[in-house]
Image 1 (cartoon, rainbow, N blue to C red):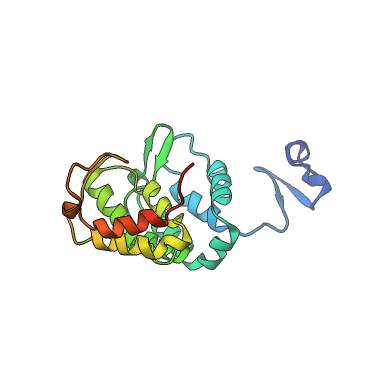
Image 2: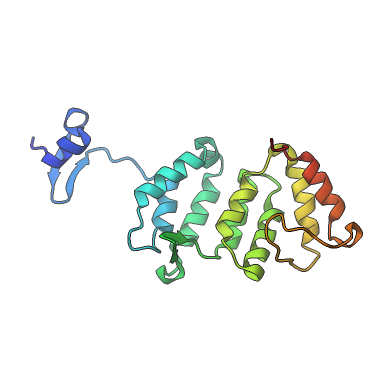
Length: 200
């Protein structure tokens, strides 16, 4: 059996699995099925000319536990399929990074709520902030999914309360000059803040 020089040099796979020489390089006789991260990165790596799906997959697998992807496989797949169905022009390149467009809200909310039960209202507020104030929805929704498990009930109450008030566009940690009684959901915010870990 013939083996490609690139395969032997870069992968060493001639010593590991049977290979066939092909026009595009070497491939295993037993290809692995795509993972949830493979599907997601295939869907979103379409904004920058030098987008690297391999780099995206690496980061995805580092940042999302295997157990999470397995427990929420249906929601992961639904989000990836929705994003893949978007036209490539919906993806923009900013600072050499592809921005995932503000779309597929239902699928992304379902995934957030699966990963972090009760975080749906946090995602709803992220959507409102992104639509009203601008910014990257993806960064905000990642924060919702990464919320402290012990604080999810308090977070759900707070962000759920905010849905009844107009969106406020403020910089992170910007002082609020209003009196406490005039700040929407002030009591819920205090409960949430008391629950969050204290920084050193």
